[in-house]
Image (cartoon, rainbow, N blue to C red; front, top):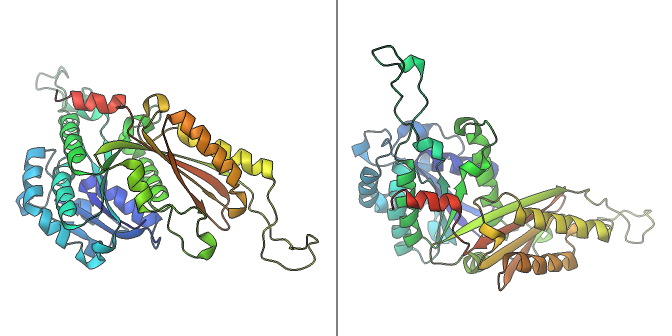
Length: 383
C-alpha cells in the first residue's frame, strides 16, 4: 500500500528520517515530511530533503516547546491546515493512508498530531494511522543527585530538575486524543526494547531503526517492483484497514526472520547441463520449518508493544522471502496455528516474495488487544 509518512516533533522526525534513508525509492513510500517547531531538530535530519521539512509555529521562536502540550495543542489547531498544504508537492491524494509518527511524551509533535489527524481525515477519504513512541518511566522521574549541581550549602542535596516531568501525562492525553481521531494507533514501547543498563540516548538510533523496519515491513508488504516479486496472495490497503480497524484501537506489530540459502539456478531438465533461470527446488521440510519458526517467533517474540496473553480480535499475517521458500501448505498451517494462538475469528494474510533474498520473514499484526500494562500505567497518570 502507498502511504504518506509524517514525522512530527524531534522524535517523530528522526524516525521518519530513518525510514526515508532505509526505504528510499521503495514504492510504498508515497511521500514523507517532517514538521517541527524546532529549527535545529529539522536541520539535523539527513534523508528527508530540505523542501520536505517544515518549521511551523513562529510563536515558538524557532525552538522546541519544552514539553508544553497545551501550547503545542494551540499551535496544532492554528497550523494544521498550513501543514497539509506543505505536503501538496508530493501528491498526497495518491496515498492510501497517512502515517503520523510522533513521540507522544513530548510537546510540539504530540500537540500537533491530533489536529493534523483530524485535518487529514477531513481532506482525504483514507485512514490516518499513528505510530506513537511511548516515554520510559525514567523520563518523568527526577534525576539522581549530581555533585556538579550541588546546592549552595555544598551538601549535594539539591537534585537536578526532572528531564521530562510531564512526559507520562503528555503521553496519556495524546494517546487518548489520537485514539479519538485515528483509525488505529501503533504504540512503540521504548521500555520493553531497552537492553539492561542501556540509556535511551544510547539506544535511540537502534530503536528508531526497529520502528522504521516494522513500518516498512507492514506498509510495504503488498507493493511489488516487478512481476517476479508480485505476491500470489496480494495484501492491499483494505486488508490492513480490516485488520487494524477504524475505531482508534491499539495494534501491535511482531516480526521475525530466519536466514536461508537462496536456491541456485538449475536446469529444468534436472541435469544441470543447460542454462536456466529457474531456481532449483528447495527441500520441503526445510521450507516448512523456516516458515513455522518465523511465524511463531513473530507472534511470541518482542512486539512493538506488549500483547497480553497473545490474544487479539483481528490478526494479519505476512510471510515473505525467496519465492521458492514460500511453501503454501506451511503458510496455511501457520495461519491455523496463529488463529488458535490469538483467538482471532479470522486471519488475514498475504505473501511478500523477495527474489534473490537470503531470509524468510514473518510479520504478525494484532489489533483489538487487551490494554498493555505500560499503556495502562500511562493512562492512569491522569486518572
